[in-house]
Length: 289
Image (cartoon, rainbow, N blue to C red; front, top):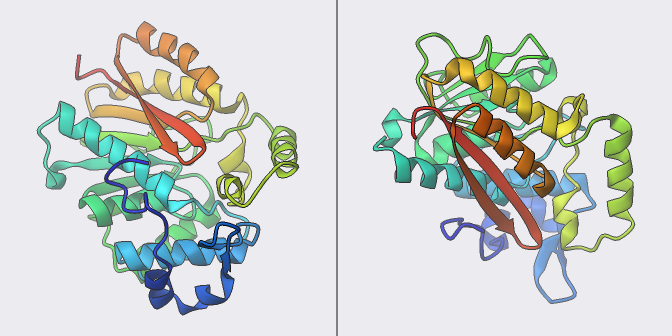
């Protein structure tokens, strides 16, 4: 994990129990004698997130509808920390000047919530799913977060990413996205079945977090989705400092690199590691050469 990730040494269960007492009955002891939760149990996973957000980020009210993606907080924080490093290295922006765009924020709104709490940034957050939007509005209301800090906008066109979201006057320090992984429902279900055949308590953390259609699969899969994003980003090259997205498959990086080079943008690839899981995000800029 990132050296500044407050979760790099594990979960502080006493602190989490004080925040959300209901998590106590879901704590288990691993073979190594450490406290953990049953990552097979979606209720336990949701309570873990709720406790983490309340204990560490002062997000006192957090919930998601059944079936929606319940993101692991430590990994999501790593992505934000990587973006923070990128901004600090390449710009002189201060937190009050930084506005990010979370593409497909989901019902959980994890990136804007962490970004506002941890970094004091402002966020624009887009979403296409109506129920996810409704839950996002509720999260903002319940936590008394004003539109000046997180502005939630509906994307009405499923083929577009930045269009109708970034306004003419918007100046965005960075965009971020956790794109759908798979090309179809069948591919997603097949991948889950394969992984479930050989899972242990540790690597369960990577897969038992739910997810609906628009969160898990898209026509053309991750690679085509990101290519479309890159091509559309050219329209907003003077309004956004850094475009970024997670890339789940290392095999996609080379082809995405070629796409960006053709667009004549500056590129960065930032590797991230959470335990046994390796991930990365790719960043490109037309403003910074």
